[in-house]
Figure 1 (spheres, rainbow, N blue to C red):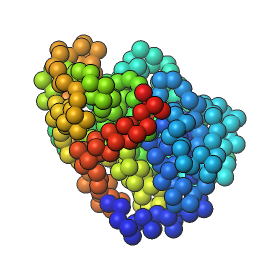
Figure 2: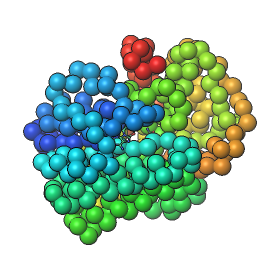
Figure 3: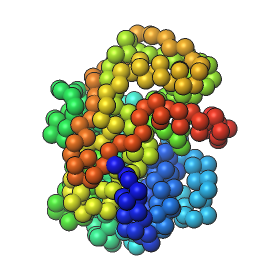
Figure 4: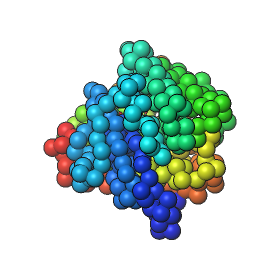
Length: 337
Ligand SMILES: NC(=O)c1ccc[n+]([C@@H]2O[C@H](COP(=O)([O-])OP(=O)(O)OC[C@H]3O[C@@H](n4cnc5c(N)ncnc54)[C@H](O)[C@@H]3O)[C@@H](O)[C@H]2O)c1
């Protein structure tokens, strides 16, 4: 939980720190940048603005003149060598984010989600080995789920190139911690939604996509019966857990599962979106093969490790999060639709 004391603690510990965020024009990275500016950190954003991911200049509205923005690719060896040098903390969020697209172009996924991250880590090892480096992995690394809630010891049997490469990248972060002593921290993240997310397609961040569908009074299409459980986390809660991990030394070298910790049936999430927005009809269609083949079953995060070690818990319930997200896109729709 971030209480007022923790918020004060965060500001005290992060004030004046040099922090780099890769993928910083996307949802998670830009929301992190807003929070870090509040904490008076010196923020550098690195983003390659690759389509069809979430880079959006409007995400920096209100802080653009308080941060350093580099339109750079994490695979660029020379640029990253210079950029890592003076940083205290690196949130390495840049990614090819769609697990379905990774099936069509596994080379691109490996290139960004594995080789790009290796480039950041190697440059940290050579030029700034004291930097703390935090990695955003995915719940999809687990593959088929044996039992819920899912803790950190659940077997990893990734089913798509996105999930393999996140899993290899996670092992690489842990290697850099164990062998080279780089203070790395790894998260496996459940379904994230909220403000500053791309709203143009359904390749990822599905709650946001359905909020747009409902706002445009279009059908909200559920594959199958929609009874599968999912765990949704609001972006502000995710930012808080990364920030806490960045200032707590015991987090170094650890893997954390993070999510809302509550299972919600997919169809209940959809009905909630339709209720909050006040439009959009929920319709059921058969599962398309390309989705059914990579479906991993019910997922609920066991958040006991992350809550105990970092003193964190999610603060935003699903309905409240959908309400805040809807209100944001009502106000700023032209920048995202
Ligand atoms: N959104 C989710 O539901 C979710 C769930 C689990 C994990 N994650 C992970 O969280 C991280 C952030 O995701 P997000 O939801 O903010 O996505 P996003 O698409 O909003 O942001 C990703 C950003 O990375 C940038 N990027 C892509 N390739 C790059 C490269 N080679 N060099 C530099 N920048 C590059 C994109 O331009 C984009 O701005 C990703 O690592 C993602 O895999 C997201």
